[in-house]
Length: 259
Image 1 (tube, rainbow, N blue to C red):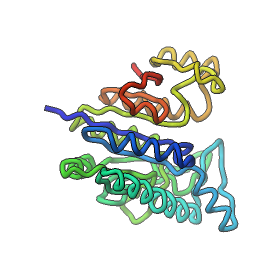
Image 2: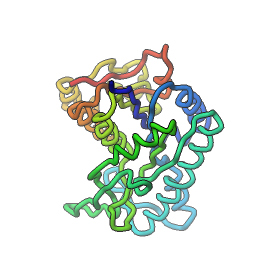
Image 3: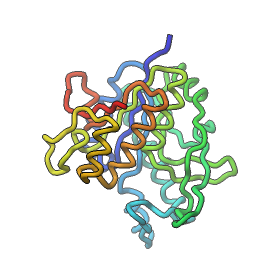
Image 4: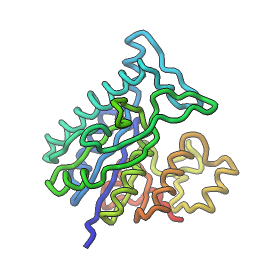
């Protein structure tokens, strides 16, 4: 019988808030059953870049990952943030292992082809090593994945953490009854970003497209939701978006995605 698995992605704005991060990790550690945590990098990579004397180049909100940038994001994502999260979870009694995509060949990716924009060392996911992740889970170890993948030819790649979470959930859905949860600083998907009471409790493709046309949903929320619907179409059992409070059993304010 398939065992339930939760793939939980934590957003950068939660990572940047120490109190919010600590609260989230306490709730994550308390979750029963099999689970995988995926995290982004927040603002720390940009802050470190600026301390080193250069500013990251952004195009339409996306980082151009130069040779210099890939060194910084690897240090921050796979190093500082990943190991701090792992250490906090170990303190809370949750045996975890921090991974980049290169570790255990967990996530193989390819450098994004140059079209209108050269994004540099940005990776598009080719394959998730579900068997390796299952072997860790079977040993009672929780994988904690950062936003760094590799191409199998010694190059590390900066990869969108929302996409990693979606693709990991899809891959693991062949082995488990898998739920994908996106945790970020808002209560869920909002029709008005300034009004926390405007949470859409259930979002399907039809009303998603309508809300996009009305520009009620826009900017960075669109790729996040595209990843959600991609996961649902590829047999992930359930996808929800909400604040870190969504991990609490009695918490009811969040968005559930359906096809």
